[in-house]
Amino acid sequence: MFTGLIEDIGTVQKITPRATGRRLVVKCSIDLGEVAIGDSVAVDGFCLTVVEKGRDEFAVDVGQETLAVTTVGDLKIGRRVNLERAMRLGDRLGGHLVAGHVDGVGSVQRIERSPDFIIIHIRAPKSVSRYMIEKGSVCVSGVSLTVNSVSGDVFSVGVIPHTAANTNIHELKTGDKVNLESDMIGKYVEKFFLASQGKESGAITKEFLARHGFGD
Image 1: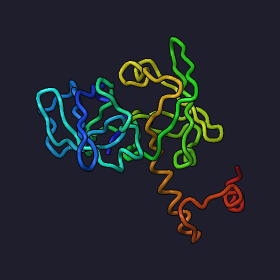
Image 2: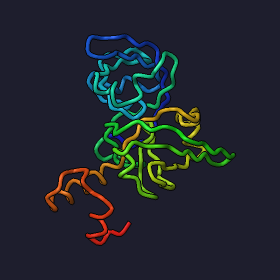
Image 3: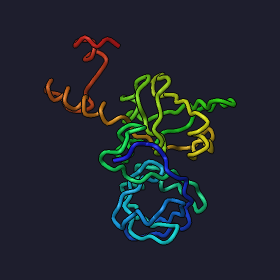
Image 4: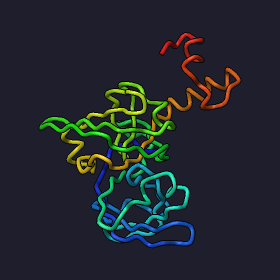
């Protein structure tokens, strides 16, 4: 479990093809003396397991499923990636509850920059956009952000200068792909609500919501 508060920006040092996926070596400034083999690290929002480590770098194995549903397949040597170690039970939850399980890949549609703020507009697949609500939470490439607005399958997030400076978010360009994880609470609420109505997950429609008093 993670919080979406980035600890470090690492750099991809090596990518090695393997029979069932790839092995990535990431250089970082995290104190790896506090990281054990088998620990979880979120890399640009997807949870991976540390399989090797050195003084200032660690290796993770990426399976075919992760390659298929995240941006990891697009990573190149030299690419900077957001890093977060798994949270400890009892830690302050400064962001929101993040599983590190990417729900889909979004596409940056537009970026508005000012000295004090960056507004990023992202088109999300249905597997993510269905859970977007204004002032709700979303994880973008591992970063916990608040949803500013929602219009169909496009949502916007605001990034303050501190977050921009301490993540790779400020490097995004129009057309870039980003890993998205929607708020897990929304997914659980939907599943329990649909189960109580005898429906399968994903069956919620506007008509169904209106019939139960939720309006638009």
